[in-house]
Image (cartoon, rainbow, N blue to C red; front, side, top):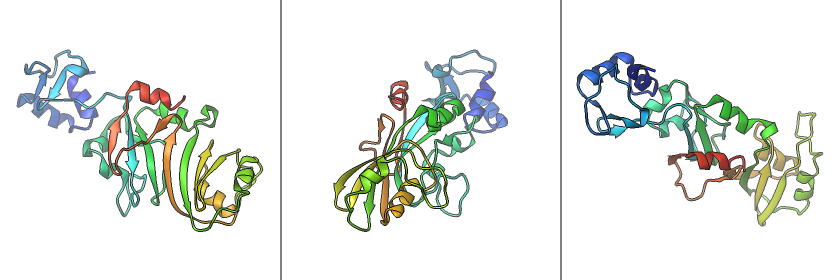
Length: 232
């Protein structure tokens, strides 16, 4: 791929913008030598204003999604893309969220521009577990774990039972729930089905990838090892 198209596809500007960057000498190699648009250079050796380029297609990052933002490109309020560099909105191929967390749910959110990887993570065949911590309005009764693990629980307006899910009681009104599928507002609807209400919801892991101490609103790029850990 020609350098102008490569850099434009990463979101740094239009092709015309990038051509001007070359003319102004802003694009160099790792040694500071000015590059020209028809040069043949490895991606990792290219610098823009002295800084390495963003990763090529295949990029994966994780975010600690805070409350109050939506997993959407357009919304009346704040969206998760507002927390990323503006150029990430216009990468080609597009950077997309891997599944969604609603506005009132915080925690681990993945992004990638690799469509095959995205579908592999969310596919039921991959059986990638997702772990949530829920704070509840009422004390747990004690029978919820057996109900959720039964594989017979039906959510309102649905005809297919949920897959078995594992519940760990942390406090009288706090629990950790591991899901093996991803239905609409599933955690909230599961607790509603047993007569409770989720007051706060936080996703702590996807597969073997754990959010850890990443601060709310922050994000980081994932290497191959971290991506592989998603699938155990």
